[in-house]
Image 1 (cartoon, helix red, strand yellow):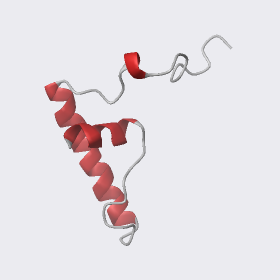
Image 2: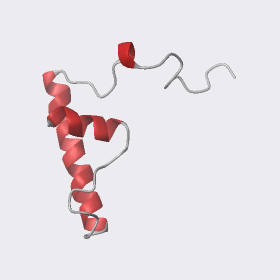
Image 3: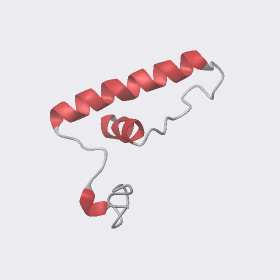
Image 4: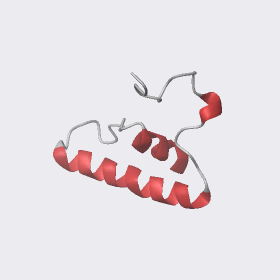
Length: 65
């Protein structure tokens, strides 16, 4: 679960844990959870992105253009 929330945080794509009923409070709680999971995941060596599984060119931005 830690790695799943780490991925959510890295890709800036947060789940609606409470069904979106709580609005801003839910957003802050979920982002806090993802931030905490990212911190914990980083300490144990998890990554949100692995280059070997990414398509070529994705995530490189517009370097040199």
